[in-house]
Each structure stands twice: as structure tokens, then as C-alpha cells.
Image 1 (cartoon, rainbow, N blue to C red):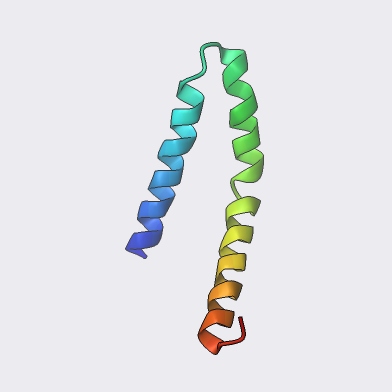
Image 2: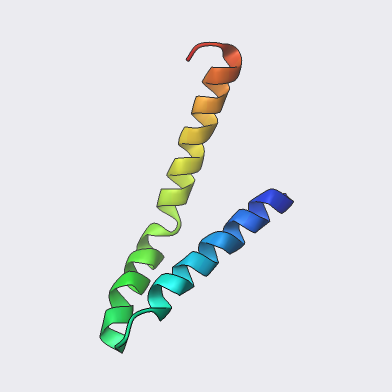
Length: 62
């Protein structure tokens, strides 16, 4: 689980980095909302896709 934890921390750092570079509070809201809405479904979908691809690769059906 440690590699997953590190990847999660990297994602969190990148999220904060993208918001902290914004000057005004208004500029910070849009990426914060987008991040909140996309944070759960997008990484989950990417992980599922990667697992399917890896499974196919290991079975030799790619």
C-alpha cells in the first residue's frame, strides 16, 4: 500500500500547487471545485482502465 500512499500524496501536492498559484480567491474557486468534483471518479476510472490493460497484457490478449 505504500506506493499507493505516495502516489496519493503526489496528487494532493499537485492539487494544492495548482490552486496556490492563483492570485485571487475567485481564481482559486474554479480549480478547487473542479478538483472536488473530479477527484473521486477520474482517478478511480483511470485505475480501473489501467488494471484492465495490465490484466490483458498479462494474459497475452492485448
